Length: 225
Length: 36
Length: 227
Image (cartoon, rainbow over all chains, first blue to last red; front, side, top):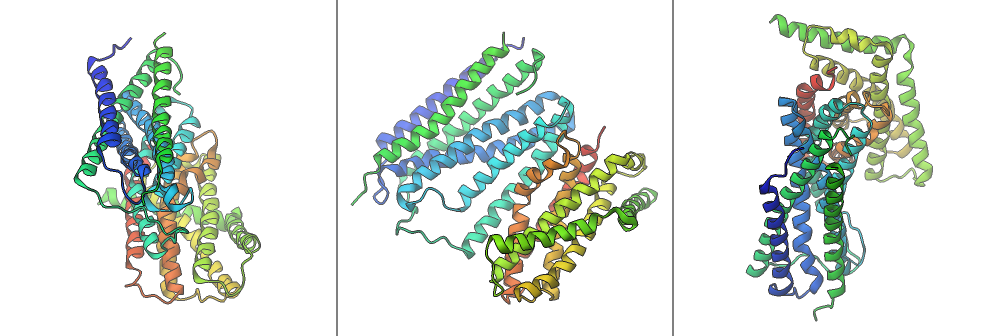
């Protein structure tokens, strides 16, 4: 039975602390934005979650490359873990993004670049799991999953640029006169930076825990999730 | 006049952190199952 | 140079075989064509399109039809091999298996281009757009090149699953979005009379997609086909 490494416990505690610290900073030490009011504060965590979602994609692709190079199952576990964690961060980012902008846009969804790209990423993540679910051996799941993760990560920047370019040609006209743009003061930058750091550490902790779960399941001879 | 969007803010944070919390709990449960 | 000529030989063999099988009555191409036309009719009524169609709508409809028809062709091209274990014979070939990838991409591209060759005059007729100009044809080839290379790669992947070719759209469509967006926008621009210079961002994006997906095929196809 693989033992739990003490570093993992440290990482877990650290991510909880950083997350709490960032939240306190945001709620009590950051100014309320004039145009949007309190809801603007969701932005810090929303962007950090989207960032974590993108990062987990990269980690999954790296895991894929390492698996294909070394053929060691632990790299496949890393890919699987990253994508599962990425689904969660992506979902959190999308829903918080919709809630954040709803008071201003007066609608729940707009096809703006970051939101749309994150939604497409979610679909790709789900496709990854459907692919794995349709394969019969752990080797096939690892190998073909790795290929799909690598090809997918190539398309993410392409998707983002194409949607952004599309938006400059077809700008969205909002029903209400509000805009989600605002200038950031130094305190806001501090909150933003702390959120990014907290979510990055949280991402590492969650991926590590999920990878450990995959290792435990393999050790126990259970079928993977 | 700054609009009062405090309830929206609470909803936003609740949803975001709620999703992550549910995931963390599911991880903990699954890890415990795997260690049996 | 022996290795390289082997490589080209395998590539050519794969390409030629696909065309021969089709020529001898495999019915893949007519199915693709009829399906593409049916899609046009379907959307015509579903979206209540009118003859004085805006350039953007015509471009979008063209690419949706081509994407659907192409997916049909991609599925057929890999399922064929699997049924006849013809792929096993190819796998025995001394060349790098990515030669198979390029050969298949080329044959898939050929078939989809033939469908496009019929669709362009049809669109010109139905929607009073001039789709027969060479700049548009070039954009269509660029778009189809990127789409079929990505599609061939993913089709080889999906055919190995339990759900077989049903999985291909799920894998292909989210990844092919940048290709489709760029292709539709470039087509729309040309129909609206813009020059290549004005559309260069889209054209460059299409070229980048072609390069990236062909490179991915070159590097990864071997791994996909491992037994």
